[in-house]
Length: 136
Image (cartoon, helix red, strand yellow):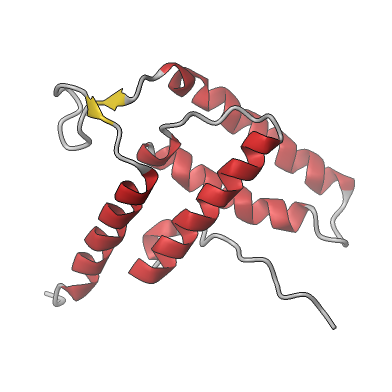
């Protein structure tokens, strides 16, 4: 009996439906927790930085491919190098407080960071609204 395939994030989040986006963001969140258990410093505000979310989604997908039985050691090394690049790029975010300016007003007064669940609900709701709009 073979094990069920592990869930993977949709790495092209722009192409995801609302339900796929919700599943992908939850999968990326679980991946972040896995990375943290491996002592990879992920800023607590990762989910409000779109570029971080996109890269984590792609790295999650690549992680499964790099560790498959037929993968070469070079695949695994490439994956770790890619993760190190993201970690370096995220370093300034580790100094962020729990306050961020609103996304629609980057020069505005910082506001408290939404919870991950609030952020996912808002992103999924926006995607549902996009999908409900008639084509013009």
